[in-house]
Length: 251
Image (cartoon, rainbow, N blue to C red; front, side, top):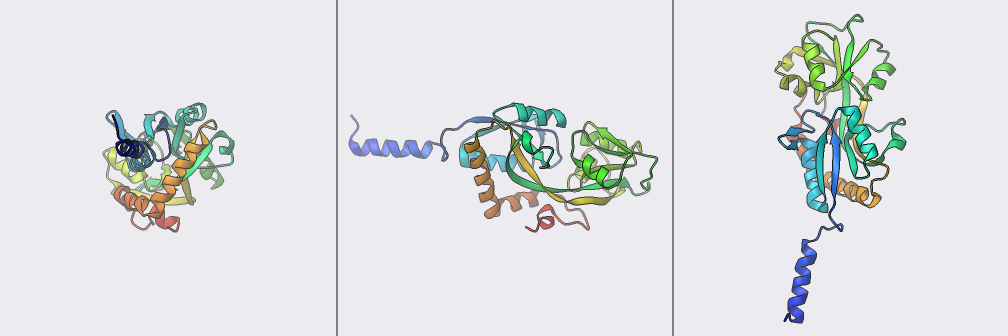
């Protein structure tokens, strides 16, 4: 028979074993491949955002399963799944009501990559990722000859094969994608367009608000204690002449 002291000790051990925010749950993170940010790795995933969400798992006890889909489908999947989230998403008026906006978790800036020996001309289109808001940025900058690609990798290959004259993509992930496709990034030059922006983790409108607040609180903690900046330095490959995402956002 347990003594009162033994019962208290057992209760204390039980409380220590519980997640700090309550009952642990499973949630799904929908995304597509973004070099260095998130990419398939066997049956799991790897990248900056994966490590960030691993820290969230440790703090909350929740588990996040990564599902890779074409970018437009990933966004729709997150909208329709009450336990679904999506990264990395730019917040815009068109998207505002479609998601529960959880927290910024990174930064970005778009640029148009071209081959150094092939100036951008009006007769060749600029490629971009289908479903990306970079389309609005390009149109606002006055570019009209545009073509959508199904993946960043396909756009990198089209640029190297000179099937497109330029490729609009995040300036901090474009070079890595080009290199992973088997090409030399020394072939590239880039012209930034638009301003630096936040990349968000967002969720279905039906996603539980208490859990969204938990995730946001952990991300604020990781930013305050320098973890986010440390992880960013691990994954970002410096692009000569341009600031890191943190520098661009004044952090």
